[in-house]
Image 1 (cartoon, rainbow, N blue to C red):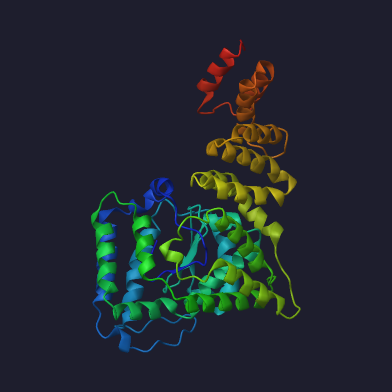
Image 2: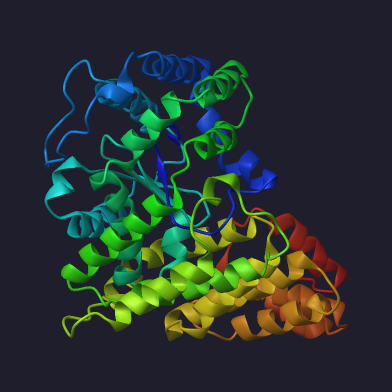
Length: 422
């Protein structure tokens, strides 16, 4: 992404695992050697700017830009170059309707600073969002999948806007320049720029750790984001609802070390308690969630995001995420989510998962919204159980629903083995 000054989200989850870095982060090293060198050289220019810490932080008024020649001006210049490359990334989600909807929420919680924002949705299945000091806001699709409504994602984007309005990145940059860490930071970026096949997101994720914000800054961003979201009429309980789910997901990986990017964030338990306390003390007022509108905006992408979620290969947490989505899902989504519960069990493959997967496939095959693959997997499960007739019917149903399926030849061969002569 753009880690030098990027305010990382408050998420307690780690960056993508190595398999997903190869798969979904690879387009970022599609920026090419030229782009990485441009980013590295821009950052070096910022690093070498003199007397930066002697400059006062300007009043951050909506629509204003840094004074020419300041270290903040140099920082913005580096981010503008990185943003130009980000706009060409294959990971960028370009759907106009989704972008307009998410930008609308970001603008709502950012108030008058809406004019400063440019929102980019990136196809990465982790819970994260970030914002650069020049107004570049990045939202990962994993955050959109995990939120249940507009109010919940509004609290996330409000947190990032809080970092922006408080100018935390500039303050951290100036602190960094007073330490020898700036040399290590540049060396890391230079390394990423010089390795043609490096996964840039992984390198920059590590680099972002050098620029991590203090816990006090994270708490301030939480406070600012909460106040902004509530002032715009969002339900103050929404942030706690989201954070409680993130806490449960974090608990599925309790023995894994937290990522360096999030190491300065207050502990999840602390943040959850703070958010709930703030919600409890909020005076009566509007309690908007806009769940139906949110679901309608996200629904066209749900199947793709579920597939990407399983691509992380963190099946315990994926089972929790998908299972909780299923528990709250409208009828139209239950077939799709049930199928992916089966997929998560099948791919995990521990004791008992084969039977659980077969049960979920059987349920999905009879629910609205199930993908054609549900009939295929149910058919294979029936085949393994020795029910050739029922397996044949399901596999035929799959081919009828997906006549151009890439695995058609394979399925037809299985049908032949089952004795189907059609």
